[in-house]
Length: 219
Image (cartoon, rainbow, N blue to C red):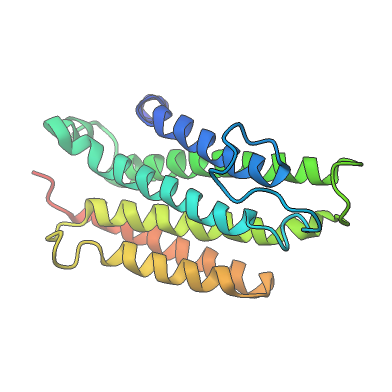
């Protein structure tokens, strides 16, 4: 059952992964001066230090956040169209397992898509002769913080999608809280502070998603 659900989630969300990968690759290619769409994002300028003084990290946070939110809503709301959630939740497996599998697949998709863009830019920056600035792999830490911060947006969107509340009332509160918390953590200068806070916040959102999945009346 778990493998079948995993394949279902991968198949249904492949188009979001593809679009997100294209968008984030453009984000990575822009500061490298290799973007096929010049002028779409901030172009590379001489003297900028990769990851530290260019626009890559901020653009990564913005675009990966959009991908994460779209993926979270697609996974949480997609099964309600056509009422396929009724079939899914009446399988011989617990609701927690069903939604834990959804979250695992969604987070894996997001982390792989966003991680590829970071690694691509980092490999380019580490390659001799590509730029005149110094480079050390520790300089990529702000980008990984950005990736981790946007994961909270995925979980916030997912929780907003399955909450039994009015859209104009409190339903979007988890996403709003996730946006605020992620933005705050993203600006923290110390990774030793930002990462534990983000991991703890993500863990809280996962527990809330599983609680709602277990207690909500989906009929």
